[in-house]
Length: 271
Ligand code: MF3
Ligand code: CO
Ligand code: CO
Image (cartoon, rainbow, N blue to C red; front, side):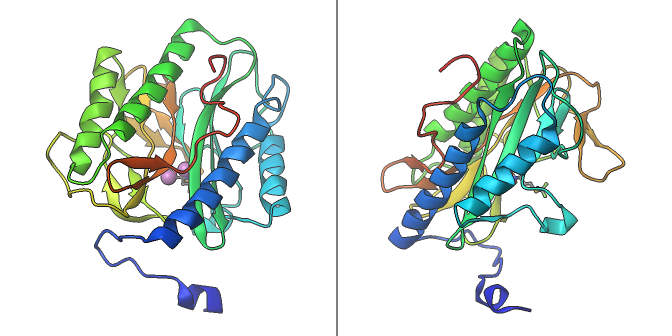
């Protein structure tokens, strides 16, 4: 075990409360990962390999003196997950080339001074179908609705209720197999943030809690399967899936989003 590992906090089973130094650390990490995804906006084009995008991400992270949280994580070898079309999450960068009309979630987690910034957005290659852009807009709306209910005294289940409400209105399903998570000096900490939970259930939020909200919404059924590579999660019915992820902190009277795009790039096409 090296020095860095001995200094890392352990999972305690309780939800960690962070102080102002934690907020400062998360702001730096969150900003860097948001800038990284901003940098990709002109790069995702028909004809480009997903592995090329991953290379750009790795270089960006290292050039900024940061670390990739995913390289070496449970044997994962890449600086990003790139999840195309019917891939729910954890798509592996490869020689697969973006085609006109593809949609893709790109998910990057960086470590800056020990703090984790975990963020993902949807990207579009060329012009995409109405069904795809509606799914993307609704999924973004669902994430932001989940974030909007975050404040001390609310329950974690209130987040899932707000997300589910947007999904229901848009006749989309909410993936239950993957959750948001606490983060900070750990990548995946307590609690699980359940995107399909009911209002008033789950732990109570308190100032200083840091976690992700990262809903995955499907056009068809919520069910997924993992491919033989052990990572790639796809919809069982092979219909489209979309995801957005922000890292957030609970403040005295609400929420701070650590991973807001400095360039105001939130969803493809619409700004
Ligand atoms: N970034 C993902 C998350 O939001 C986790 C990816 S783990 C990996 O939690 F190993 F697949 F990269
Ligand atoms: Co995450
Ligand atoms: Co992520």
